[in-house]
Length: 322
Image 1 (cartoon, rainbow, N blue to C red):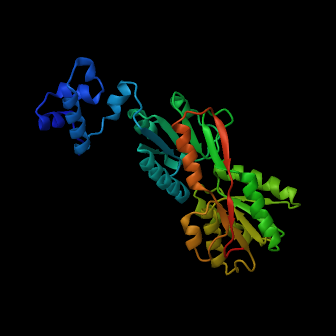
Image 2 (image 1 turned 90 degrees about the vertical axis):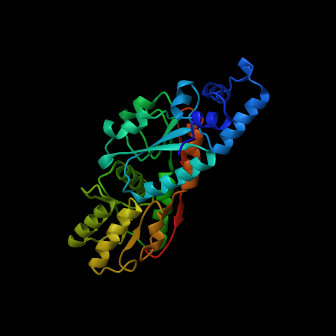
């Protein structure tokens, strides 16, 4: 339970006004004795007093509170990011205000928590090309972990997609795969990633086909796309999946069809969520350095630096599906 200035005053037998002046740093201006100031500060520390964010905001001071807007609470990659952000908030002594979007679509109702609280900055988790809802927060530093529009006033932090695509495609070529297919859900990040993979594949002399499911759920999309290709008699020898969740859905369909992985079909993912290693067979994927990305996001909102794009290098993790 939060400790109030009234409780501190009652413990010390002094007035609430005196405690307020000490904790606001104005005690010496009105001649409060140094030993009294020390007593109040000591009691406040022992009792765990924390000034309210609203009060700090009214005084024009930083509240040490950061808003976090998440595009999809069901995405396990985003869940891992939130865990990292919480750990970093503890490290820097910040509080978090969490907001999420229904069906990945920003809505005023979803943003109410961010409007109601005095936040010093905003971290956005997810990709979106047209985030006009961010205009309400342009007075504060914004960091997006993901891709944003060209005119977005934020620091955008993401894995170098081109480098990651080259790692995966080179790995598949080296293991004898000649006819991969990119599979994805109907989501902005998946479509953006497909464009990069198609370009990199062309540089490697591969005409990469794209199978985009109408599903927006990643696992269902992978399962749907794989089943459609199996039923059509696909000649592909590898599924390059937009994310690990898409890859797990594709693996589910391949197992149902009794197609050997990786003997007949290789499968790759992207993100390296914890389940990628635990899945049977364990998933070849691109590891995204989340700790680095979260560190950069916190540095951005504690800045504020000018809008910019920061790319981090992913790492190929080869497991049993290739």
